[in-house]
Image (cartoon, rainbow, N blue to C red):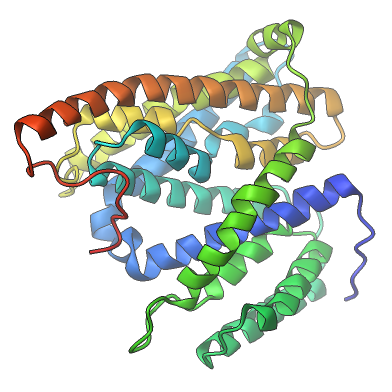
Length: 362
């Protein structure tokens, strides 16, 4: 196996910059598995089931629209399945200062499971050819990183060359290179040693997240979106099956899928809604999960690679759907936020926390 990374700027943005975003996702996944909501699946069963149906129903909506409509294209079925955790949490933080902490925990668990399933889709569906030697080399480097983590080597600068090599060989293997970021995140130690204030997973996440949110994601969006919004393109989004399937999938499919998944988990298992969480809150969060953006843009570029006109339509639809989802969720959750503020004033000290708190901390 050898590295051949003579790539265009746009390809570096899609495969390189977004690997930083997925590294943060991997670190967050590891923390959730070790010390977060996913540590005890019995406690996370409701948002986990909600996440599965929250991906399946939007994909089904897209397939139905494109299968029934003339000019449909089923290649984009996975586009409306994804949720952008960063943007969803950002909107929630802005509009939900008085919402229960359980609401943020529900959204975080939901989005983490959504990210994990989206990663599997990217790895399995969008891998055309496979170089097993390069893939084994990439995982061997990740294994070396895992070993060094267990030897308590803590410097980020020691690990950067290993991360770059793992990414490079993953790219050469034919598997989407962002998977290397997830693998590295999952290989990072997340448990605390005696006297340790934060684990490597938490420390690296704090160091890398500003680069991801402030540099990698905006630059990726700049290169990946590459669309201009006009009245004609907006009309095309709502008239072409590809665009309409994405919009309906993200806006309606997410609400139906997540709400239905939550209901089924509560109705047919011993699980219950978290204390302080109402069904109106679940509907608001399900609307918020319709913000696809980063991952949906990536899947759109992969699904319609080599078909620029359809790819541009799909990306325009993702942007339109994400804006609509954010507006709908803001309207729903703002009403809930106002109600919780009134309850807080009338029953001081009885409302359990706000969304600005981290539910994983005591």
